Length: 98
Image (cartoon, rainbow, N blue to C red; front, side, top):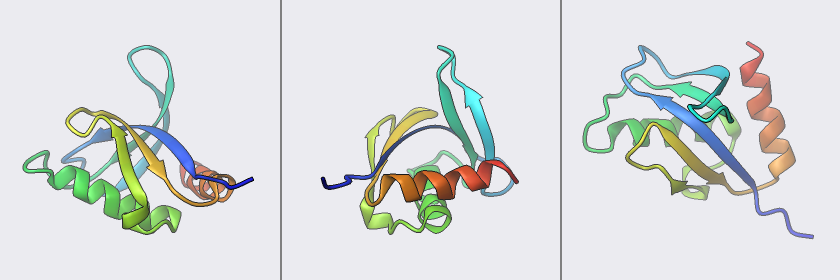
């Protein structure tokens, strides 16, 4: 069986002071999402670019292997991180514990 990666739901906060995972939060419908903030403003895609760069560094997945499924223009986003889903999930889970 080929592992296609990890589908990740997150809430992005632009202009958040610094690039950081703020843990697991509930979205407006009560579903859990990874809360991430970036220092970049939500102008001309800068916050999305900063998000991809941050996730690539934090997860070990190259930026070219991270893509938006939905939400490019909203705070709630769904992304696909290609690779070993279990390893990516474990790496990201460790960030929520700091």
